[in-house]
Length: 340
Ligand SMILES: Nc1nc2c(ncn2[C@@H]2O[C@H](COP(=O)(O)OP(=O)(O)O)[C@@H](O)[C@H]2O)c(=O)[nH]1
Ligand SMILES: [Mg+2]
Image 1 (cartoon, helix red, strand yellow):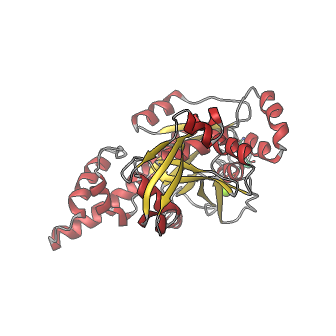
Image 2 (cartoon, protein in one colour):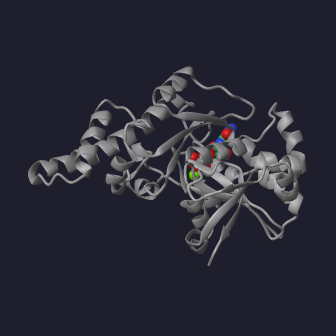
């Protein structure tokens, strides 16, 4: 699970990185950090069990510095680095900066990045299809590339349901940026929240989501003690840290949900792709549990939080036995029974 920040120079990518990870980047050429996904359910279970160890779901985020003279946002070097990401976070500058002679213009920045993504992929597709014209090998990627070409030619991003999972598999090696998940981050002046309506319209037409944050404010926020954060937020008329909401949003957009395990040793959130079965989820913990799977004992977090003990949940009839094919839901607390 990997997210990558992209955007023009001075749009605030590094500051967003620092705000989300709580790390000092040291302004390196490439910053890589791990983000723990805040989860109130884990916090609650931690309070109940006082476990030795608490583990949140995580994903990796990376941030790259553009070369000083770079005209493009996605230079070939950046492109190589972000090809491994599952999701791209497009940071747009919506504050005037002394570092840049240009005033903030989110519409233009978005257009520029959008064009670079679409054109970059288009050129790869075109080249491959030209080769195919001569070779006529008709490999499984070809029909998918033709379909993608049509979409890119109209200067559109492919939509979620334009391709089947099978089709996507056939072109996975190309690492097309336009086929990745994309989220737009509008980086605001502290205390402001203006989003250009033309930008909103474009993002809607592209079927993407956007998020407003002030990286500077969020960055100051992560540096102050947890107890004082609320007061700080209220001063700016906010009630929740935007980076926390953003992190949860990214996790969801990546297509992940969490099942939970609990006990005195460890309380833990396990990231899984939405839609997987109990036996597959067991395999995330250990292949032996998957192989020797007998059943899953499941309590939904909402039920558990009412009773706060397994015994009470059983009494209330909120304790379920599920088989291999059970589809795991977000917030299921699971204990696997298995043979070794
Ligand atoms: N006022 C304001 N300044 C910001 C904000 N985000 C970043 N900056 C400033 O813009 C400059 C560039 O930020 P940086 O994160 O290094 O941008 P990058 O080139 O995209 O990595 C720095 O001086 C930041 O302090 C913001 O939300 N508000
Ligand atoms: Mg930077």
